[in-house]
Image (spheres, rainbow, N blue to C red):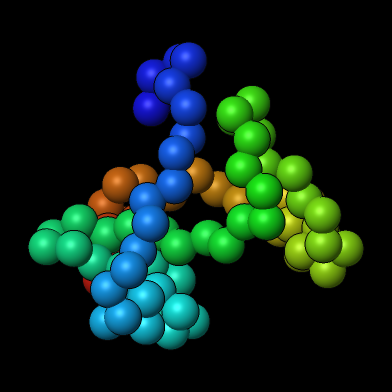
Length: 82
């Protein structure tokens, strides 16, 4: 997405696709590409995600306060393939 572009939703009408998205899995695969699924309550165009759920905030803060080394592209691919 380029600066100034607005984030417009993609409306899903196909029941099979809806079922796949709502299955609880963390990503979907289309061909060889994988797309991370995140549920959001509100989307703004200011390029930031606002945490509104106290439990989610607790989990994010715990993760941020731990040692979180940057993974190489190969390590990420290996994790996604498993």
